[in-house]
Image (cartoon, rainbow over all chains, first blue to last red; front, side):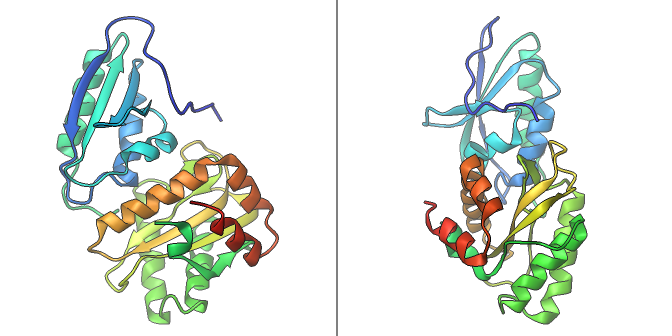
Length: 108
Length: 152
């Protein structure tokens, strides 16, 4: 089992992209969308960080376990996404779109 | 919300007999039924709902822990169970490792906020490797209940 760091620094190269997304689905960010988010983030080389709007803590977007500490939020919550690395643009586009595509009615 | 707010004391199992996913879920739901936290006629349907949820993606979130869960219309308040396997169970976990500690959550249909707060609490507690180790070594239901009482 790889070591999942609770906090990660900025990527070594390139600028850090930063976007705010709003959780729109009625059930909020429960376990399944969080693991799906981590799966998607793992498709990219870039360093991905996630935090809550207004809070300093940013955690790795690639570890479902550590994402649970910031991402279990209700509809209407703002989350901050950061991406830095060779494919940061593509990663950020895909991750922002992810929030638009969460089905509104689904099981937990 | 704390673990003791939703984990049913009499549904704590320090030594699961089951050695496969479906059997673990049945044994834990049965524990809730025997603790009178569920009615007999609800149990089968709740097992089905939890297994259906597992098909969408394992709730084995890594680090030897899993949070099997479901919403069910017959439930009017969040109930939880906690079980420990001494041998570990293959659970198709995200990190491929066997699961030793299971926290089951069964939520009412209409309270997504409660479900998220419980999940958050469980995942926060289970991130503490010392806590998970202590759960795995706890010899009795009472010892596990005491450990839950020490958590925020």
